[in-house]
Length: 263
Image 1 (cartoon, rainbow, N blue to C red):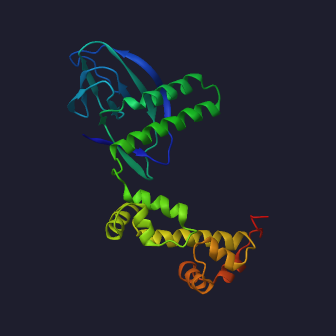
Image 2 (spheres, rainbow, N blue to C red):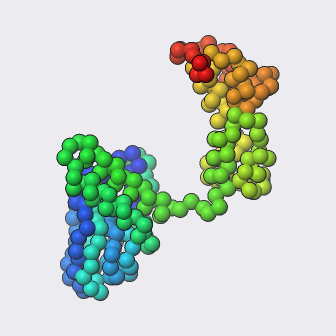
C-alpha cells in the first residue's frame, strides 16, 4: 500500500473532526478535497484509495491524502470517525504512514478525544491541545506502520544503560539485562541506534560527568563515583577521551553557578 509522509516537526491544523454517517454505494461519490483525511472505519466496504481498490473492515484506519480522489462501496450504511487536517510538508524530518492500516480499533478513544477537544476549543490553548492530540494520533499510526521488533533486546539494553550507567557495569551486565548474548546485542543495538551498547554507556556517563562538573562543586572523586567510574585515574583518562579535557579543565570552562545538588 502507498504511504504518506508525516512531518515530525509540524502540527496539523484541524478543519473537521468527529463521527459521521456514510451511505456511499457503488463508488458513486468522489471525495476529493484540499485536506488530508484520517478515517477510522466502523463498517465493511470496498474503497478506492490512491488508485487502488481495497477491502475495509471495522477497525481499519485509512489516510486519504489531499487532492487524491477517494470512493466507497459500503455493504450497508455505517459510521466512521474522521479528522480532516492540513499540515506544512515543506522540508524537515518525516515518518511514513501507510494509507491503509488494519486492526486500529484501539485508536477509537484517541479519535473521540481529538473530536471532543476540537468541538469544545474556545481559545488558543484549546485549539493547540487538539492539534497536539492529533499529532499524537498520527505518530501512533506512523509507529503502527513501522513497528518496533518484538522482544526488543536493543531497547531493553538502552533502558538498562539509562538506569544503571552510574554503577560499575559493562557489556556483560547489559547483555544479561537484555537476555541475549554480547555478540547479538552489539549487532541489533548498532542497527537500532547507530552505535554499540558499550559506546552508548560511555556516552551516557560522559554526559552526566559534564553536567556534574559544570553545574556542581562536588569533588571530582565523587563525580567519578556518580558516573560509574570510581577509580580517579581511570576517570581522568575517561573524561579526556570523551570530553577532550581533564575533569578540572571541563569545570573551569563552565560559566554556570556552582552548587551541590545534595545540599
